[in-house]
Image (cartoon, rainbow, N blue to C red; front, side, top):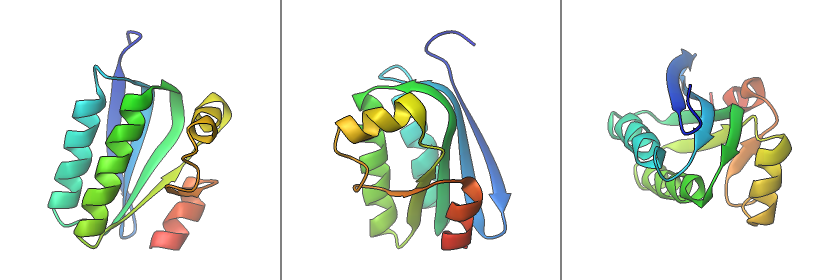
Length: 116
């Protein structure tokens, strides 16, 4: 995986769609993430968890993507939650004042329990 690579993997846990991210989120790959989340929301998913446990770094492009996806989810009656927001990634969310802008859970299991 090169420095700008982002791997997006989808799975299910009950009625919840899990989007597990690995790598970095920046301006080179944020549109791909937004496309994936938009497709999931557009397909009618109502409970979506984005797992950041394997994200090493993100830029403001990631925050924009998440804000847009969150707005899309809300408009379609879906719920979007985040988990695995720890370490440096959590610090970036905190510095950006975005911890309260999203539904953030400590673990994938917690997020799925709340949404499922």
